[in-house]
Image (cartoon, rainbow, N blue to C red):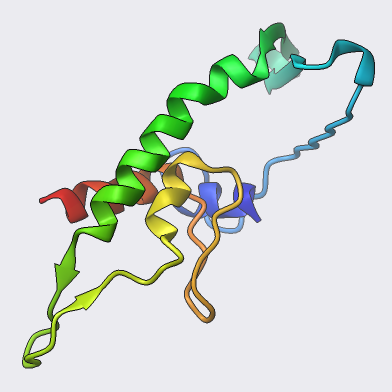
Length: 134
């Protein structure tokens, strides 16, 4: 679960076993085609038990948002194809696994090799990319 992973990776904002309320609803509306509409609502507690709600409405062209991301995915994928690694104590150089979980930094639902852990925390994913580039 993406939210649980995010909460577990941030002990400053969330305490142990804390689970914020959240609901995600995605509906396809053929009439709007590539124009996507997002309505986000954030509610928090304020002074004396009051509630504060921030509501945002966003409209954008989905494919125009995705184009730079696709370029970055292709470049990172190509770069990773050129990298060879050798484990300590072994003589043989190996390529990365064809399923690049490193690309999950830019995707909603990361795909990982069978048996590998799924990491949804954005900062942890970013650190993985940075560490490979070192």
